[in-house]
Image 1: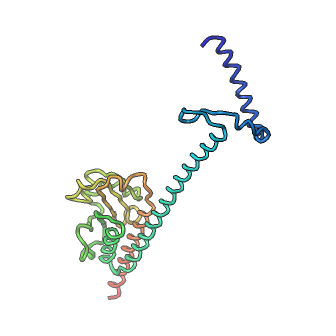
Image 2: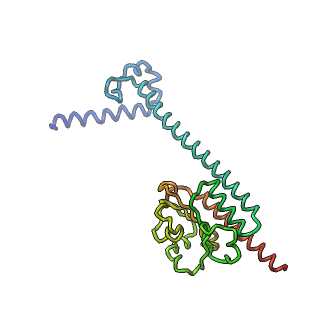
Image 3: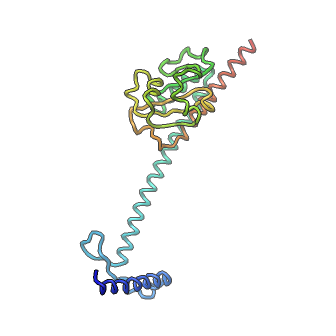
Length: 246
């Protein structure tokens, strides 16, 4: 760029800024000079022609409206999804409330996850007081281990954090939770049962790698964990009370 061109550009830029500043300070300018709006021409976004300033403003507003409409549709879809999940959690709560003992609690939990939530692969790992509950519960759904079992070492961080986790898990974790079926499990939701997994772990597996991902909300999973652990604790209390009264 020549010195003359640089000087010309430096003279234009302050002038452009002055015009912009003036229009910003006088928002009623085009109301007092309405005819200018039709005279001002801007390149069309496609580059094929020119349009008036008013037409450009209309185009910009239409784009904004479309973006807002898409956003609103997304919010409505999320609200409907949350409402459906809330209904399913409510139905699960009723199942668990009707359960009279631990065996019934686990059976209701397994049925609710399979029938209401479409969970084809799920397992509950209980850490203590399991001697009386295995009858009537599918062994595929129930695992009982000592809390000090070395097989739980790969879950140490999850147990300590005590919050639901979604996504891919390590092979050793997947093999422990879903023995013999780990190759078909692409994503997993792990839910603590009780504080620091005091009761155990609930794990739900899916062959869809996107079904459970680290970015998804875990609020409803946490509610399911709270319901299950509370129902199991209540069943234990009833059993202890019955033994004490006999």
